[in-house]
Image (cartoon, rainbow, N blue to C red; front, side):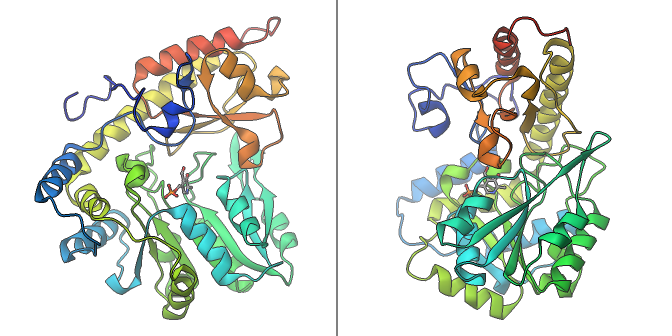
Length: 389
Ligand SMILES: Cc1ncc(COP(=O)(O)O)c(C=O)c1O
Protein backbone atom coordinates (compact mmCIF):
# COMPACT_ATOMS: atom_id res chain seq x y z
CA UNK A 1 0.00 0.00 0.00
CA UNK A 2 1.61 3.27 -1.05
CA UNK A 3 1.33 6.36 1.13
CA UNK A 4 -2.18 7.39 0.10
CA UNK A 5 -3.51 4.21 -1.46
CA UNK A 6 -6.71 3.78 0.47
CA UNK A 7 -8.14 1.40 -2.12
CA UNK A 8 -6.00 -1.52 -1.09
CA UNK A 9 -6.77 -2.56 2.42
CA UNK A 10 -4.59 -4.69 4.58
CA UNK A 11 -5.34 -7.93 6.32
CA UNK A 12 -6.54 -7.31 9.87
CA UNK A 13 -7.93 -10.78 10.51
CA UNK A 14 -5.85 -12.59 13.11
CA UNK A 15 -4.41 -9.35 14.49
CA UNK A 16 -5.19 -7.65 17.80
CA UNK A 17 -7.99 -5.62 16.15
CA UNK A 18 -11.08 -5.36 18.33
CA UNK A 19 -13.13 -4.57 15.25
CA UNK A 20 -12.08 -7.72 13.38
CA UNK A 21 -11.78 -10.11 16.35
CA UNK A 22 -15.47 -9.73 17.10
CA UNK A 23 -16.28 -11.82 14.04
CA UNK A 24 -13.20 -14.07 13.97
CA UNK A 25 -13.87 -17.24 12.04
CA UNK A 26 -17.11 -15.87 10.55
CA UNK A 27 -17.76 -14.30 7.18
CA UNK A 28 -18.95 -11.01 8.65
CA UNK A 29 -17.57 -7.68 7.43
CA UNK A 30 -16.94 -5.58 10.54
CA UNK A 31 -18.21 -2.03 9.97
CA UNK A 32 -18.88 -1.19 13.59
CA UNK A 33 -16.35 0.30 16.06
CA UNK A 34 -14.85 3.61 14.89
CA UNK A 35 -11.39 2.81 13.64
CA UNK A 36 -10.38 2.63 9.98
CA UNK A 37 -8.96 -0.23 7.92
CA UNK A 38 -6.13 2.00 6.69
CA UNK A 39 -2.51 2.34 7.76
CA UNK A 40 -1.68 5.54 9.61
CA UNK A 41 0.13 8.27 7.71
CA UNK A 42 3.68 7.55 6.45
CA UNK A 43 4.95 10.36 8.72
CA UNK A 44 3.49 8.64 11.78
CA UNK A 45 4.86 5.26 10.74
CA UNK A 46 8.38 6.56 10.22
CA UNK A 47 8.34 8.54 13.48
CA UNK A 48 7.24 5.42 15.33
CA UNK A 49 9.94 3.33 13.61
CA UNK A 50 12.57 5.83 14.70
CA UNK A 51 11.21 5.90 18.25
CA UNK A 52 11.21 2.08 18.42
CA UNK A 53 14.81 2.03 17.18
CA UNK A 54 15.80 4.16 20.15
CA UNK A 55 14.94 1.09 22.18
CA UNK A 56 14.09 2.65 25.53
CA UNK A 57 10.44 2.98 26.52
CA UNK A 58 10.41 4.65 29.89
CA UNK A 59 7.69 6.76 31.51
CA UNK A 60 7.05 9.63 29.16
CA UNK A 61 6.49 13.38 29.10
CA UNK A 62 5.83 15.33 25.90
CA UNK A 63 8.88 17.11 24.49
CA UNK A 64 8.43 20.77 23.47
CA UNK A 65 8.15 19.89 19.77
CA UNK A 66 5.08 17.71 20.51
CA UNK A 67 3.33 20.56 22.31
CA UNK A 68 4.33 22.99 19.54
CA UNK A 69 2.85 20.65 16.91
CA UNK A 70 -0.49 20.60 18.74
CA UNK A 71 -0.56 24.35 19.34
CA UNK A 72 0.41 25.16 15.78
CA UNK A 73 -2.21 22.80 14.33
CA UNK A 74 -5.03 24.27 16.40
CA UNK A 75 -3.97 27.82 15.57
CA UNK A 76 -3.61 27.07 11.89
CA UNK A 77 -6.75 24.95 11.47
CA UNK A 78 -9.20 26.63 13.83
CA UNK A 79 -7.60 30.04 14.55
CA UNK A 80 -7.62 28.96 18.20
CA UNK A 81 -4.63 29.95 20.30
CA UNK A 82 -4.09 27.73 23.26
CA UNK A 83 -1.61 28.00 26.08
CA UNK A 84 0.52 24.91 26.82
CA UNK A 85 -0.56 25.17 30.46
CA UNK A 86 -4.15 24.42 29.45
CA UNK A 87 -3.34 20.94 28.13
CA UNK A 88 -4.04 17.81 30.16
CA UNK A 89 -2.80 14.66 28.41
CA UNK A 90 -5.02 11.62 28.73
CA UNK A 91 -5.02 8.01 27.52
CA UNK A 92 -8.50 8.38 26.04
CA UNK A 93 -11.55 10.55 25.77
CA UNK A 94 -14.04 8.11 27.26
CA UNK A 95 -11.82 8.48 30.32
CA UNK A 96 -12.28 12.24 30.06
CA UNK A 97 -16.08 11.98 29.83
CA UNK A 98 -16.09 9.90 33.02
CA UNK A 99 -13.63 12.17 34.83
CA UNK A 100 -15.67 15.24 33.86
CA UNK A 101 -18.87 13.76 35.31
CA UNK A 102 -17.10 13.01 38.59
CA UNK A 103 -15.30 16.34 38.78
CA UNK A 104 -18.18 18.69 37.98
CA UNK A 105 -21.33 16.94 39.16
CA UNK A 106 -22.37 15.25 42.39
CA UNK A 107 -24.26 11.94 42.62
CA UNK A 108 -27.83 12.64 41.51
CA UNK A 109 -26.85 15.71 39.46
CA UNK A 110 -27.82 15.83 35.81
CA UNK A 111 -25.66 15.84 32.69
CA UNK A 112 -27.48 17.17 29.65
CA UNK A 113 -26.84 16.18 26.06
CA UNK A 114 -28.54 15.84 22.66
CA UNK A 115 -29.44 12.31 21.57
CA UNK A 116 -28.87 10.13 19.71
CA UNK A 117 -25.23 10.48 20.68
CA UNK A 118 -22.05 8.44 21.21
CA UNK A 119 -22.98 5.98 23.98
CA UNK A 120 -20.43 7.00 26.64
CA UNK A 121 -22.01 10.48 26.72
CA UNK A 122 -24.94 8.76 28.45
CA UNK A 123 -23.13 5.96 30.27
CA UNK A 124 -20.29 8.06 31.77
CA UNK A 125 -22.58 10.03 34.13
CA UNK A 126 -24.38 6.84 35.11
CA UNK A 127 -21.09 5.09 35.93
CA UNK A 128 -20.73 7.39 38.94
CA UNK A 129 -24.43 7.71 39.86
CA UNK A 130 -24.98 10.97 38.02
CA UNK A 131 -28.04 11.17 35.77
CA UNK A 132 -27.88 11.50 32.00
CA UNK A 133 -30.62 13.61 30.41
CA UNK A 134 -30.92 13.45 26.65
CA UNK A 135 -32.91 15.97 24.61
CA UNK A 136 -33.81 14.51 21.19
CA UNK A 137 -32.50 15.97 17.95
CA UNK A 138 -35.36 16.86 15.61
CA UNK A 139 -35.44 15.99 11.93
CA UNK A 140 -36.79 19.00 10.04
CA UNK A 141 -36.85 19.28 6.25
CA UNK A 142 -33.99 16.80 5.88
CA UNK A 143 -31.77 18.31 8.56
CA UNK A 144 -31.12 17.50 12.17
CA UNK A 145 -31.97 20.56 14.25
CA UNK A 146 -31.74 21.44 17.91
CA UNK A 147 -34.91 21.76 19.94
CA UNK A 148 -33.88 24.81 21.95
CA UNK A 149 -37.22 25.01 23.76
CA UNK A 150 -36.87 21.40 24.90
CA UNK A 151 -33.31 22.11 26.06
CA UNK A 152 -34.59 24.99 28.19
CA UNK A 153 -37.33 22.81 29.62
CA UNK A 154 -34.79 20.11 30.49
CA UNK A 155 -32.89 22.40 32.87
CA UNK A 156 -33.43 21.68 36.58
CA UNK A 157 -31.58 22.90 39.67
CA UNK A 158 -29.54 19.67 39.38
CA UNK A 159 -28.31 20.26 35.81
CA UNK A 160 -24.56 20.83 36.11
CA UNK A 161 -22.97 19.80 32.83
CA UNK A 162 -23.58 19.80 29.10
CA UNK A 163 -21.88 17.22 26.86
CA UNK A 164 -21.43 18.49 23.30
CA UNK A 165 -20.35 16.27 20.40
CA UNK A 166 -18.79 18.58 17.78
CA UNK A 167 -18.96 17.34 14.99
CA UNK A 168 -21.70 14.98 15.99
CA UNK A 169 -21.39 11.21 16.20
CA UNK A 170 -23.54 9.42 15.01
CA UNK A 171 -25.45 12.09 13.02
CA UNK A 172 -22.30 13.18 11.10
CA UNK A 173 -23.41 16.77 11.55
CA UNK A 174 -21.21 19.87 11.72
CA UNK A 175 -22.25 22.58 14.16
CA UNK A 176 -22.66 26.08 12.68
CA UNK A 177 -21.22 29.15 14.35
CA UNK A 178 -24.64 30.58 15.28
CA UNK A 179 -25.68 27.29 16.87
CA UNK A 180 -22.46 27.12 18.89
CA UNK A 181 -23.01 30.72 20.01
CA UNK A 182 -26.53 29.87 21.12
CA UNK A 183 -25.30 26.79 22.97
CA UNK A 184 -22.54 28.81 24.65
CA UNK A 185 -25.13 31.39 25.80
CA UNK A 186 -27.33 28.57 27.08
CA UNK A 187 -24.46 27.10 29.14
CA UNK A 188 -23.43 30.49 30.48
CA UNK A 189 -27.00 31.44 31.38
CA UNK A 190 -27.52 28.20 33.30
CA UNK A 191 -23.98 28.14 34.73
CA UNK A 192 -23.25 24.73 33.21
CA UNK A 193 -19.77 23.36 32.71
CA UNK A 194 -19.45 22.48 29.03
CA UNK A 195 -17.60 19.37 27.95
CA UNK A 196 -16.96 19.63 24.20
CA UNK A 197 -15.85 16.37 22.63
CA UNK A 198 -14.23 17.44 19.35
CA UNK A 199 -12.48 14.18 18.51
CA UNK A 200 -13.99 14.23 14.98
CA UNK A 201 -13.08 17.89 14.35
CA UNK A 202 -10.45 17.10 11.73
CA UNK A 203 -12.80 14.81 9.82
CA UNK A 204 -15.13 17.32 8.21
CA UNK A 205 -16.05 16.16 4.72
CA UNK A 206 -17.67 19.38 3.51
CA UNK A 207 -14.83 21.72 2.48
CA UNK A 208 -17.08 24.77 3.02
CA UNK A 209 -17.72 23.96 6.68
CA UNK A 210 -15.00 24.83 9.19
CA UNK A 211 -14.52 23.06 12.47
CA UNK A 212 -15.19 25.64 15.18
CA UNK A 213 -14.03 24.73 18.69
CA UNK A 214 -16.75 26.16 20.92
CA UNK A 215 -14.13 27.38 23.40
CA UNK A 216 -12.66 29.58 20.65
CA UNK A 217 -15.84 31.68 20.52
CA UNK A 218 -15.18 33.84 23.57
CA UNK A 219 -13.11 33.96 26.76
CA UNK A 220 -16.36 33.59 28.75
CA UNK A 221 -17.26 30.24 27.24
CA UNK A 222 -13.61 29.12 27.22
CA UNK A 223 -13.59 29.63 30.99
CA UNK A 224 -16.42 27.09 31.40
CA UNK A 225 -15.27 24.57 28.80
CA UNK A 226 -13.30 21.35 28.78
CA UNK A 227 -12.44 20.64 25.14
CA UNK A 228 -11.53 17.08 24.25
CA UNK A 229 -9.32 16.51 21.21
CA UNK A 230 -7.23 13.62 19.93
CA UNK A 231 -5.33 12.51 16.83
CA UNK A 232 -6.87 9.06 17.25
CA UNK A 233 -9.85 9.09 14.85
CA UNK A 234 -8.33 11.19 12.09
CA UNK A 235 -4.95 9.49 11.87
CA UNK A 236 -6.18 6.03 12.85
CA UNK A 237 -4.11 5.71 16.01
CA UNK A 238 -6.78 5.08 18.69
CA UNK A 239 -4.87 2.03 19.92
CA UNK A 240 -1.99 4.30 20.94
CA UNK A 241 -4.13 5.98 23.59
CA UNK A 242 -3.21 9.65 23.26
CA UNK A 243 -5.74 12.40 23.83
CA UNK A 244 -5.92 15.93 25.19
CA UNK A 245 -8.27 17.86 27.41
CA UNK A 246 -7.84 21.60 26.95
CA UNK A 247 -8.98 23.46 30.04
CA UNK A 248 -8.18 27.20 30.06
CA UNK A 249 -9.64 27.93 33.49
CA UNK A 250 -7.17 27.01 36.28
CA UNK A 251 -9.89 26.16 38.81
CA UNK A 252 -11.70 23.85 36.40
CA UNK A 253 -8.36 22.32 35.41
CA UNK A 254 -7.40 21.68 39.05
CA UNK A 255 -10.76 20.01 39.72
CA UNK A 256 -10.39 17.87 36.62
CA UNK A 257 -6.83 16.87 37.56
CA UNK A 258 -7.86 16.02 41.10
CA UNK A 259 -10.44 13.58 39.72
CA UNK A 260 -7.76 11.86 37.63
CA UNK A 261 -5.19 11.56 40.41
CA UNK A 262 -3.82 8.07 40.92
CA UNK A 263 -6.43 6.55 38.61
CA UNK A 264 -5.84 7.71 35.06
CA UNK A 265 -2.87 6.15 33.27
CA UNK A 266 -0.23 8.31 31.62
CA UNK A 267 0.24 8.68 27.89
CA UNK A 268 3.02 6.50 26.50
CA UNK A 269 6.14 7.51 24.59
CA UNK A 270 4.77 5.95 21.40
CA UNK A 271 1.55 7.90 21.79
CA UNK A 272 3.40 11.22 22.07
CA UNK A 273 5.54 10.33 19.05
CA UNK A 274 2.49 9.54 16.92
CA UNK A 275 0.68 12.66 18.11
CA UNK A 276 3.51 14.96 17.06
CA UNK A 277 3.87 13.36 13.63
CA UNK A 278 0.09 13.47 13.18
CA UNK A 279 -0.38 17.15 13.89
CA UNK A 280 2.86 18.37 12.30
CA UNK A 281 3.69 16.12 9.38
CA UNK A 282 0.52 14.42 8.18
CA UNK A 283 -1.55 17.14 6.56
CA UNK A 284 -1.22 15.92 2.93
CA UNK A 285 -2.23 12.45 4.08
CA UNK A 286 -5.24 13.87 5.97
CA UNK A 287 -6.38 15.76 2.88
CA UNK A 288 -6.08 12.59 0.78
CA UNK A 289 -7.99 10.66 3.44
CA UNK A 290 -10.80 13.24 3.43
CA UNK A 291 -11.06 13.03 -0.35
CA UNK A 292 -11.29 9.25 -0.15
CA UNK A 293 -13.88 9.32 2.63
CA UNK A 294 -15.94 11.82 0.63
CA UNK A 295 -15.91 9.35 -2.27
CA UNK A 296 -16.98 6.54 0.07
CA UNK A 297 -19.80 8.66 1.45
CA UNK A 298 -21.02 9.63 -2.02
CA UNK A 299 -20.88 6.03 -3.22
CA UNK A 300 -22.92 4.85 -0.23
CA UNK A 301 -25.54 7.58 -0.47
CA UNK A 302 -26.23 6.81 -4.13
CA UNK A 303 -26.19 3.03 -3.62
CA UNK A 304 -28.52 3.24 -0.63
CA UNK A 305 -30.97 5.54 -2.41
CA UNK A 306 -30.98 3.44 -5.58
CA UNK A 307 -30.65 -0.10 -4.32
CA UNK A 308 -31.87 -0.38 -0.75
CA UNK A 309 -35.59 0.24 -0.29
CA UNK A 310 -36.47 0.64 3.38
CA UNK A 311 -33.03 2.00 4.36
CA UNK A 312 -32.56 5.77 4.44
CA UNK A 313 -30.01 8.39 5.42
CA UNK A 314 -32.15 11.22 6.71
CA UNK A 315 -29.77 14.19 6.55
CA UNK A 316 -26.51 15.34 4.93
CA UNK A 317 -23.38 13.47 6.01
CA UNK A 318 -21.04 16.38 6.72
CA UNK A 319 -18.33 14.81 8.86
CA UNK A 320 -16.85 11.60 10.30
CA UNK A 321 -16.73 8.22 8.58
CA UNK A 322 -19.90 7.08 10.29
CA UNK A 323 -23.24 6.69 8.56
CA UNK A 324 -26.49 6.74 10.54
CA UNK A 325 -28.95 4.47 8.79
CA UNK A 326 -32.67 4.56 9.43
CA UNK A 327 -33.86 0.97 9.10
CA UNK A 328 -37.18 1.39 10.89
CA UNK A 329 -39.16 0.71 7.70
CA UNK A 330 -37.71 -2.83 7.65
CA UNK A 331 -39.63 -3.68 10.83
CA UNK A 332 -36.76 -5.69 12.35
CA UNK A 333 -36.78 -6.27 16.11
CA UNK A 334 -32.99 -6.74 16.16
CA UNK A 335 -31.39 -5.25 13.04
CA UNK A 336 -27.81 -5.91 14.17
CA UNK A 337 -28.45 -9.65 14.57
CA UNK A 338 -30.32 -9.68 11.26
CA UNK A 339 -27.50 -7.98 9.35
CA UNK A 340 -24.90 -10.20 11.03
CA UNK A 341 -26.77 -13.20 9.66
CA UNK A 342 -26.26 -11.62 6.24
CA UNK A 343 -22.55 -11.04 6.77
CA UNK A 344 -22.42 -7.47 8.03
CA UNK A 345 -21.35 -6.23 11.46
CA UNK A 346 -22.92 -2.84 12.27
CA UNK A 347 -23.35 -0.79 15.46
CA UNK A 348 -26.73 -0.91 17.14
CA UNK A 349 -28.56 2.44 17.12
CA UNK A 350 -29.89 1.63 20.59
CA UNK A 351 -26.31 2.11 21.92
CA UNK A 352 -26.66 5.74 20.87
CA UNK A 353 -30.08 6.13 22.47
CA UNK A 354 -32.21 5.49 19.36
CA UNK A 355 -35.41 3.48 19.59
CA UNK A 356 -34.66 -0.25 19.46
CA UNK A 357 -34.83 -1.54 15.89
CA UNK A 358 -34.84 1.92 14.31
CA UNK A 359 -31.19 2.66 13.40
CA UNK A 360 -27.78 1.14 12.81
CA UNK A 361 -24.43 2.88 12.28
CA UNK A 362 -22.08 1.91 9.47
CA UNK A 363 -18.34 2.73 9.57
CA UNK A 364 -17.14 3.66 6.08
CA UNK A 365 -13.46 4.12 6.96
CA UNK A 366 -12.43 1.23 4.72
CA UNK A 367 -11.55 0.51 1.08
CA UNK A 368 -14.35 1.21 -1.40
CA UNK A 369 -14.40 -2.47 -2.43
CA UNK A 370 -15.46 -3.38 1.11
CA UNK A 371 -18.40 -1.01 0.80
CA UNK A 372 -19.40 -2.45 -2.57
CA UNK A 373 -19.55 -5.86 -0.89
CA UNK A 374 -21.38 -4.33 2.11
CA UNK A 375 -24.06 -2.92 -0.19
CA UNK A 376 -24.43 -6.32 -1.83
CA UNK A 377 -24.88 -7.95 1.58
CA UNK A 378 -27.33 -5.27 2.71
CA UNK A 379 -29.38 -5.87 -0.43
CA UNK A 380 -29.48 -9.59 0.31
CA UNK A 381 -30.61 -8.78 3.85
CA UNK A 382 -33.70 -6.83 2.81
CA UNK A 383 -36.94 -8.58 3.68
CA UNK A 384 -38.93 -9.64 0.62
CA UNK A 385 -41.90 -7.56 -0.44
CA UNK A 386 -40.52 -4.03 0.04
CA UNK A 387 -41.41 -1.53 -2.69
CA UNK A 388 -38.42 -0.61 -4.94
CA UNK A 389 -36.14 2.23 -3.80
C1 LIG B 1 -17.38 11.35 20.06
C2 LIG B 1 -16.39 10.32 20.52
N1 LIG B 1 -15.68 10.52 21.65
C3 LIG B 1 -14.77 9.62 22.08
C4 LIG B 1 -14.53 8.46 21.38
C5 LIG B 1 -13.53 7.46 21.89
O1 LIG B 1 -12.44 8.08 22.38
P1 LIG B 1 -11.25 7.26 23.06
O2 LIG B 1 -10.93 6.10 22.18
O3 LIG B 1 -10.17 8.27 23.14
O4 LIG B 1 -11.74 6.86 24.42
C6 LIG B 1 -15.22 8.21 20.20
C7 LIG B 1 -15.00 6.97 19.45
O5 LIG B 1 -15.71 6.62 18.56
C8 LIG B 1 -16.17 9.17 19.75
O6 LIG B 1 -16.86 8.99 18.62
